[in-house]
Length: 299
Image: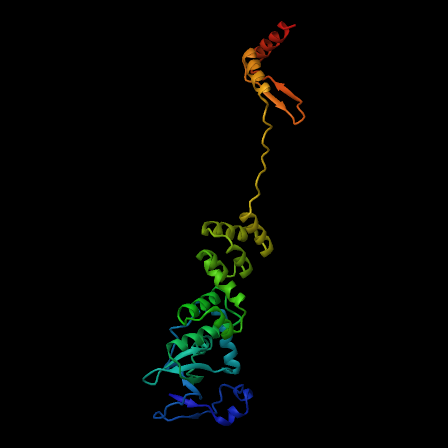
């Protein structure tokens, strides 16, 4: 079952928890006793259920193994937090990495802090604890914020107070959920950073988001280069076309007569000052000679 942690050891502070984990200085509690809420006990791992409200979806195996090595050397320094359910079973509120690492070591017990929490409180505690972690990817944080909005009915202002983050920071994370799932996966896997994602999210088309994402990967673009790429996409350069000068009527009428005389459509160019030139095209040597004879016949 559970063993209460020696109060004298707790009174000596954190150093008491850093003792050799192989030496058991805890006082066992009888099977008929029930742990009190607000106490830290040595709880059997077999009595603990994982948190169904756990917002984390990825646990890196290497990180768990590293934590297990630390626990094997120093023990579990920070107790996990659990809530009592029924039939003397407990449910994780926070500390799943420590729980997983302890199971990996085949430990029988783990230090656990007992508290009372309903489903909503358990979800909120798990979400807030995860948001405070440094090893979460941006999408996990964004999903945690979104669940606080959807399930706990918190506003961005309320979340700002709960997690100690600026409202603008929360809004920036939430915007990442507008990215195409492929781009979100790339961010979670570390192929692009949050800075890349914040630039790409300014593209509304998911198809174009994916195209830009692939270009970032293939060309190894920096965040700044990505911002420039997105800016050019949203503000494409327009090709300026100059409207040709409108020819006066006397030029148009004269051009028709010249075209009829030479048997060709001609081109007349005229600048703003009124000067210009007449272009008479020809299609072969014979055609050129024909036009030349027409010019000579006028002399």
